[in-house]
Amino acid sequence: MPDDLYVTLDELAGVIGDAAAARLVAACGGERLYVPRRFRATSRVVQAIGADAADQLSRHICTGRGGLWLELPRGADGAVIQLRRRVARICDRPDLSIRLAAREAGVTMRAVRMRRAKTRAKRNGSQGTLL
Image (cartoon, rainbow, N blue to C red):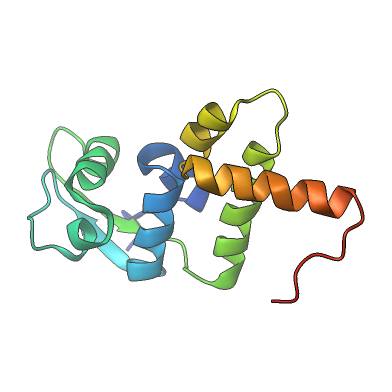
């Protein structure tokens, strides 16, 4: 399978967004996946990430001649941890508003507010929550 492409989680996140990349890796991580020029509505990829993100992936991967085989990164905890760290770095940037941080990280504004509150609590030395 030397003609297969391998994409990293960061590349996937850059193309389809963090949340969609996490869902795709959770559904198909570590597998060899054919990326056609256009996914069918019933494909696992569309079911996992939605038609818009699947179209973005196709446009990024496919050539003028057709689709290609793609090796997806494994959906192990390590990949999820990397994704969470990337989101945390974006959310903790003081130069970004909540709205911009949410947009760049691919999460909701609520998630950014919660992340920032957790960071403030750690900085202030609070014991956090029991659960």
